[in-house]
Length: 307
Length: 250
Ligand SMILES: Nc1ncnc2c1ncn2[C@@H]1O[C@H](COP(=O)(O)OP(=O)(O)OP(=O)(O)O)[C@@H](O)[C@H]1O
Ligand SMILES: [Mg+2]
Image (tube, rainbow over all chains, first blue to last red):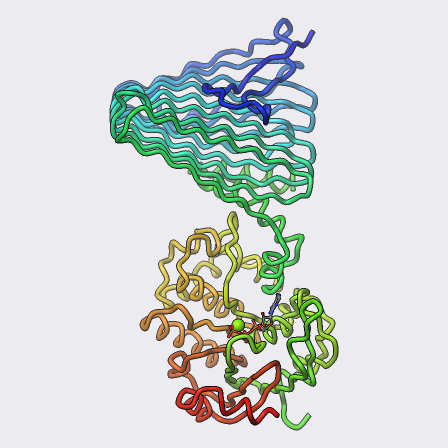
């Protein structure tokens, strides 16, 4: 039997009128199938480690553990696909030792009425770096939770998120970056397009903790609103416990208003193409960013299919 | 039709909302000719540019716009662009999410079908070099965070990539520093020579014209063309201002 499950909760619940402090999903814990867990240790191979994660049954959970030893570099590509009316949780737990670099690339391909909950937990030691490229062109609902602990001094995190919301899709993103170490840095870029009556919620918490002197946190968003009925909620939270820290947030909202449309059309670009161009943009950028030809090609093919 | 004109505007009346702004404009531009349109602020120069391009916010009450012998007065913005009308915007819009390169590429593809990516990139790079634009701008969101001058250069880049038959440049030189004016002027010259296109340059200054051969100068006041002449008219205006021309209109 499914029960209400609260996920993507913001650490600081400041106001409630948007009812966006967390997300609630229906989940059947009893009948959740545990998929075989993966354990990846950096240094095994220079090639990216590719994992295909396909749902099994109505409810399933996959656990991936990644550890990068001191000075090691690892790239993991997770290809997640969920069939119609199915629910999947993918939990990736990462430990980055001193001076390691971990790149996690997550690509989603889901059918309508499906649910994917992507949970990423990462802890970094001194001078370690974590990079995520998370690409969501799929048709189902997507819940994303990235929790990054910049524990060691000089550790850093870079997050790139790209989504395309169509029809009644719900895209719910929760990012929490805790800056514990000195001179830690994080950069978040979340871009996407919303069509029809798609809904997106973005919660970005950058917590510049006490003791984390000279830390820098930066979050940026570009949202293209391409429908009358789309909903866009953005809750950026930057907490500063230290004085000599820097936290920035910037959001750009784009839309195809009359003036913008005229600009496109004056170059011979029709409304239809203009909308397509705008919807594709974020996903295309991330496809290039994956740095893996096969993955890039697959993403662009998916995009052709969904648009 | 006396001579072989690319553009003919006949007794054009244009209004925005209830207000008529152009009160019977007549103007002819020959093939591969360069025309200059001057006039005080708020007289309707940009309005004429928008009307030729087909901006739906500007209503043509009467008169005709003829391009290449074809009446385009009722045509959609899209179709006109495909027929070779190009407007360099006085204030280019910022379009987050769409790269400069992607914008130009899809404009070309709408006209010509799928284009070879390699050829496109080669040409884009070459043209950007010519305009002293950093190549990295191709991958930046269209005009987002560009300086005023950079936006104008991006417009000229589009002009050179799209190679229209008719280019209307609306104050492309304003906001450009001395070097940038020279660069842009060279770009326009290249368009003139290579694409054999016709130009209608709306400007308040003469600097941008230095590298170009101007065939005709039109002066607009209060929504009408009040005088036409050769390039010497540009200098005359610069010396005397617009005051004298207004009187001729009555
Ligand atoms: N979209 C609009 N809405 C309302 N009024 C407009 C609009 N466009 C033009 N106008 C009005 O029409 C008149 C002519 O404007 P236009 O922009 O064509 O002048 P211009 O000759 O290009 O001036 P400038 O040299 O300052 O660029 C002005 O009075 C202007 O306020
Ligand atoms: Mg103007």
